[in-house]
Image 1 (cartoon, rainbow, N blue to C red):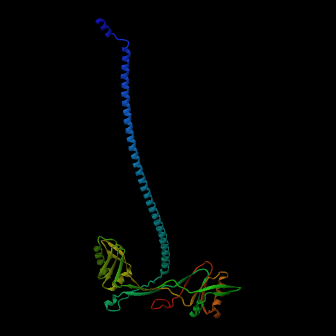
Image 2 (image 1 turned 180 degrees about the vertical axis):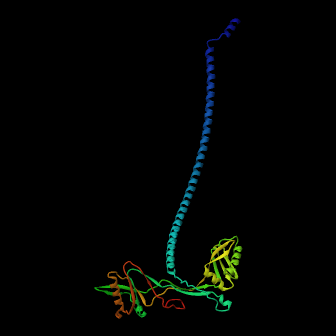
Image 3 (image 1 turned 180 degrees about the horizontal axis):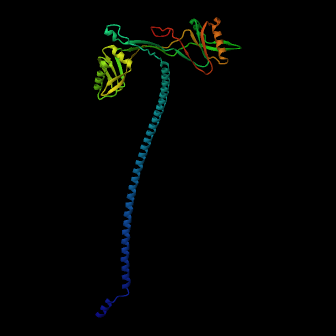
Length: 380
């Protein structure tokens, strides 16, 4: 029996196979459950991590949104400031443009005024050239001989008035007549079948000047030109002094030499007057500047502008007739004007001269200056 029991124990039964399978299945299920638990834990952990990341991202987004809003506000504020600066700069630019236009207009006005004044005060007066021949001293007084030859030229600018078309000037013999007519606001001049209405006006002449030019020609000085440049200024002065000091060449004792190297000219002052006068008549003189050189010689001229006066005159016997309609012949119209202003019934009188400018033409009227008030320089 023991052997049989032993055999029975060792031999597998039919129930052992399902049990083994069940164990294996249970073990497999445990592994699957463990694996599922691990996966579930990982998923939960990932979920927690994602939620944290989401919360951080939301915080970051809110922070960035706040920064963006702040930057937008700052940008808008900067834009407002920039626009304000642009408006201010545009305003300043407009003001500067207006100032520039005003200054340009003023400049053009000043230029026109300067051109007009230049034309008024520009004087072209030819001073006659007079040949003076030295015949010799008339006195033994050397100081008297050294005096310069003097000339005084009085220049008087002729007063002028620019007449335009439809204007006339009438000069009366008596200034009282002109004064009476100037009191009338207008005059009706009879021209054949029509009446011509004109306006008498007082004349204001352009500014006029009076001045004197004093010319001195020293009798002991000589101007030298066309001097070539030398090695040194002192060497040139010494050579000039020696050359003009040679009596054999017509020179004489030199008192001083003023040399200007910039234009190659010099002024030689002699002790005696006859030397400079004799040399000036030659026109040329040979000097030794390391080599013989012919230079130009002439008298020295010294000018002074004195007694300069400027004034604006008003003629007392001459009036201006304005607003004349150009409907008649020039000669006929001038005759009508003269007839009208000669009649005493029209407050007129004897006419010295009359001139009418027709149409679109212009003419310059010149007035003779009779006298000047010595106190204020105004014409009488």
